Image (cartoon, rainbow, N blue to C red):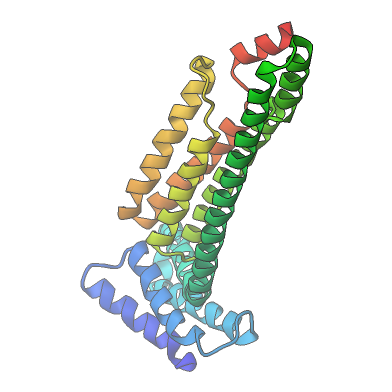
Length: 273
């Protein structure tokens, strides 16, 4: 089979051409299918796998070089076809590995949910204890009550802790978007990409400030990110290249938003303190 992969790809390309389906998306699918059938026989990263990719890409190049003198006239088209063949080859050799990655991510999400639940339970227990301590201070002298209230407030979640939690959620949202980009770029299935987008939205919602008033510029960027998240989800049903472009735009939008400071109103309050 490995020795015949070039012949197989060229035959499939010819068939697609005869039926009028020889487009970049179809080229990628043909190469991906041929490579994935053979890649499972070799060890990941081995010389055989690298040779397999070279043969697959060469098959596409040779197929479109047959016209010889017409090559110069279709230089841009050849670039797109070579790009599609490389993408298909990479997706083909990574298909099995992506299944393992997807399973690992599922395990991580399960553990993260378990950790979040345990942390929430711990916080609730601490809140109950602190509330009971505050209650006991009501019957104490004013000076004692003030000391108890001050100590309890110092132990409650501070503004710094809240900011750390927000920044953590922002980083997790960005990381999920990065993973969606990587999955789309290197052969992940649409369901895998959608899972990452859902995860990004989950963390983004946790990172959103609760303040009612926000700077107009910051609000606009947040609206852009929400629009891009929605667009990325719906684009999964569209062409492959459009998906990747939308995901890249989403990543840039998230990076631009999350580097911003708190709303201007809050900054002014901090300065006046």
